[in-house]
Every structure is written in C-alpha cells, then in structure tokens.
Length: 315
Image 1: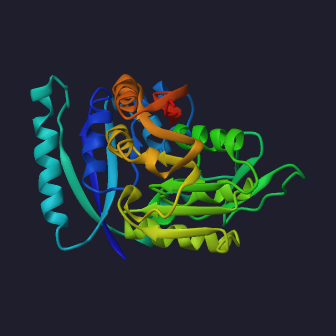
Image 2 (image 1 turned 180 degrees about the vertical axis):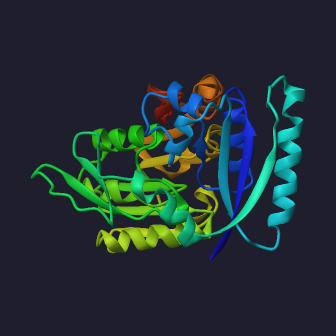
C-alpha cells in the first residue's frame, strides 16, 4: 500500500497547532524531527519516532510529519492542510517558513525506517510493550503486549499512552467491560484485556487502525475478549462499560463528553487523554457542563490525562 508523507517545516511554538491540523485531516499519528525540539523533551520516547540524524544538525525548527493513504481525496486534504497552516499567523502563531512538502512512500519503506528505534519498554507497574521483531524475557509479574503498530502508530511510548496504561492498571478489575475510543494500534484495548477485563470494544474511524488493531489482537490471542469495530466515536458502541478510555485529542475529547455518560455504568470511569496542557481548562469546563466529575488530572511532559466519572443524580 502506498502512502503520502506530509512534512511541515515550522517552529516549536507552532508544533501543536500543526499537529492538530494534521489530526483533523485524518492522520493517526505524528512524527516529529528536529534537534532543538528533541532537546526540549524529557526523553526520546515523547513521540512515535524521532530521527537521530537530525540531532547532529544545526536545525532550529521542527519538521512535523504525518501519513495519509493515497485515496481519491488525498490531494484535496493536502491542499486544505497547506491553507490551514498558512492561516496560523492570523492567530498570532509563528510558523516560521511554514513549508508543506509531500513524498510518496510504501508501507514497507516507512516501517523499516523506524523499527530500529522501537524496543521492548515497560510501561507502568506490569505492562511491557514488545515489538514483534524483538525478543524479551518477561518476569513473572509482567504482562507482555506483542505489538506491530504498522501505519496506525501507537507504540506505547508516548506520554499520553503511558498515562492511559497506568490509569488502566489502577482502574481495571476482573470482569470489567471497557470501551477504547480511537483504538489506533489496539494497545490500550490489549492492555485492558491483559489486566483482566472480561470484554473490550475497540473502535476507530480509520480503517487502517481497525485492520492493525485486529492483527495485534490476534497476535496476543485476545480475539475472544476484544471486538474491533469501525465507527465514529461512540456511534458503534454497544451497551455500557465500566471504563471508557479515549486517547485522542482535546477537541475530540470534548465532543465525546457530550455522550460518554450514556455509555458509562454507575460509578464507571472515563479516562480521557491526548490533551495538551493549554487545553486542560477548556476540557474541564466542558466536562462540568456535561455532568462529568473530575477525579484527578495527571500530567506528563506537555500532555494531560483527565480521569472523570458521571455525576450521580440526586434523589
């Protein structure tokens, strides 16, 4: 399968705004390249992939990359991305040169360029993310997730995913049901099942993510527990869950919160991640309007995860 790589040369300041534009265009993950940006991050696991070669160059900006399949409307999407990036200065965002370039790549070429960076990683107290092409000897208390994210991204090393996995460890009990909204590579669904969930629904709007999730769930022999569905947010969800986890982005989390309480069991927990720090208060305000009570907010790097529950009705 062929993909279009979209690369936006911009500033550190504009990184999140450009990423949001790309996400809204339908990409499933962001690749960031740039030595200065790399140095500002806590470690080299803050993004799905960082090009080590750029660390040796005198480059004072960042390149934000994403991938779109070569569908019939891809040229329209690229044109829209270019227009939206060019409009960011109207909102007092310095985009630097703001150059948008494209390159046609195959899935095989893309995957081979970053696999060397993806190694077995322990996340939380017990979960270990192991790429399928690596070997690993697990301790007796470790739960190993076999993963090949393909073009769906989601390697488990990004701060938002780490926080979600830690919250699942704190929350999931045997016999719980879980909804994973925007499942990507399926990593959170698999983690929930490994932690004892009886039933998991994994939902994603992107057909590539659905395909990759199914593959990873088969690799982990969890097809009897996890049901992968193609759908938009909760439109494909069936029944109520003990836990709903959504590692997406702030604007979509806010839209999701309109309906989430209808799919939560009494005392059910909503784990919302993918929220940049400057959007936290916006999300909290929307949650309050939708009768979602904040339990706590966790932060890691530039990101936040909000844990909430539905407000109980007074008698």
